[in-house]
Image 1 (cartoon, rainbow, N blue to C red):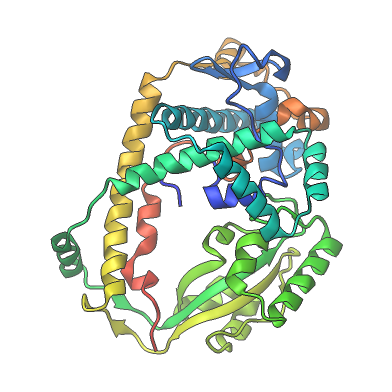
Image 2 (cartoon, rainbow, N blue to C red):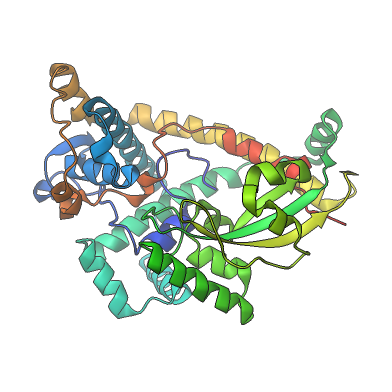
Length: 397
């Protein structure tokens, strides 16, 4: 998971879902993007258009933007633009550090992504046309996301954790592995959500039912659950091959409601039939591990050492990412015209007009799908807390 808590998708999620959503082209220089529309902001000479902001705002609202008040819509646009600015700053930093991927690596990933998802070249070209996007623009957006991912990895690779630090962390808070289950999930959502990894995002109840049935048939034919979850699930957990982590027994009912009994009744390695939520989302859960009794963990277990080291490394990487982003932002020349117009016209909200279908469909509105995951624009250390040894340690019977 990327330590940069910006409104961009992690690489695996973005690159697998790129065939669904119109990809953003905020990296186009102002001299060459005049046809893209009015600038919402300029980052070191690179224009981010109002149409881009409109597109991402529409994606985040998931078709409900007309229910937002003018004030709510204005606030949403400002958050989206802040995220796009941050995304562009990070990309430019990656470029400065010579972390851009080679063309052959981009082409290789595209081909592998098509193969994993079962998308033909004809379907790929059709999707590009539907999103008003050229293949060159599509590849350029992939280049940016891969570069940002490399920037993230470059930071993590600099961090070293000593055995002494692991031992001190263990002594300060000896982890206990609670009784519970390790679970994975495949999700199919009838709503257009752009949150998962499948380029063939189900739209509507009929498509969702057909898709989940097809996935269930694949599983029963012997296909690997983790692989299918990675390339076909429509949920953020797709980036982790469907892994939901370890759930203590006392949290199963609260976490899974009407599905709790079926899940708890699984044996390790088994999976459920397709289960439908009241909101229309479909799930197939797999029990990947079970621990029947609480267990005191020890440093003799290499996995425990790894979990603690990863937690320390993640905390430090998150802090370093914040520092790098702050430094890059301080050095960047950012002109935010939406903010300027809002301040100049506080009663009319300036150019913060309602998002229209026309704006969302425009080629200029190809805001980065990466910005559709979160309105937060600042990095956070929250990811560092997600690998607690007491929760994430591999379950053992």
